[in-house]
Image (cartoon, rainbow, N blue to C red; front, side, top):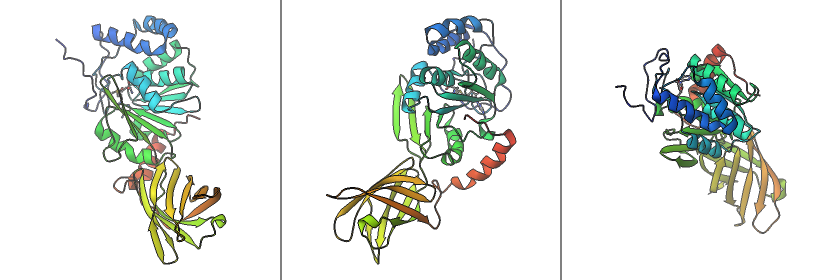
Length: 336
Ligand SMILES: C[S@@+](CC[C@H](N)C(=O)[O-])C[C@H]1O[C@@H](n2cnc3c(N)ncnc32)[C@H](O)[C@@H]1O
């Protein structure tokens, strides 16, 4: 009797993927996978796959076994990632390609699957073709997710393991602020999710990669008529707080929020009136609007001074090093 198929991934001994096996479970899986593709392609996929490679749920993979995300959870993950035609999605460890195909077919995204097992890559390509997708929309590459540059993706999906998610964190923090990250089953440790959801038994998490807004910002807002003002921001993951310094006084920031590159906060100026700031961080500039209570908004800018602390003090420091050495070895994967 074969062991029951796992419903969650487990760690796998490093090594090649298991040889293809056939069986009832595999046939059921082929149909279940096909169900994500819509009525037309589903028939074609089932027919084409009937005498082809059939992966088995729980089969070994490089760092984690293959277990497919259920169809309902795939749809929910794409909703939580707010995936649309302007997006470039990458699925890390793409298995049979179902997330990539659903993103391209159902949401018009350009999607890429990175998968270590060449047989799963071939199967994914076959399924994408059967679903009528060109390589421009759904692409699969045989690759190690830890040695591949996927930094131009706008949405990252994954169904891996807790320790693999943690290994990926520095790479994710180095991506463009606003990039959405959606994980099936496993969280990111101390980096708390911005959203959680469920689909059946599947627990799902979504994060938005935050800009690094930490450090000192010198305010430039002539319309406010303030003396020289500096904002000092502290940041850990997407949580920010801090204070404003004017002359020799300071006052704490109120309701500071960082959502991708959008940084908002309020501050009570020396005259006692609250000012709301709402704008976006782009490198060393923050640009937005400042609104004094009861007055019309005025344009405001701030320039960054001095250093920044890592988004995650523990692991951000090695991100550029790891990306450049690993990414260079495999060559960048471009979705654009
Ligand atoms: C749990 S499955 C998830 C498959 C798919 N993303 C889904 O949600 O249906 C994890 C996949 O990651 C692949 N994998 C494991 N380690 C990998 C690595 N280092 N690089 C690329 N793929 C890997 C496995 O072969 C497997 O297909």
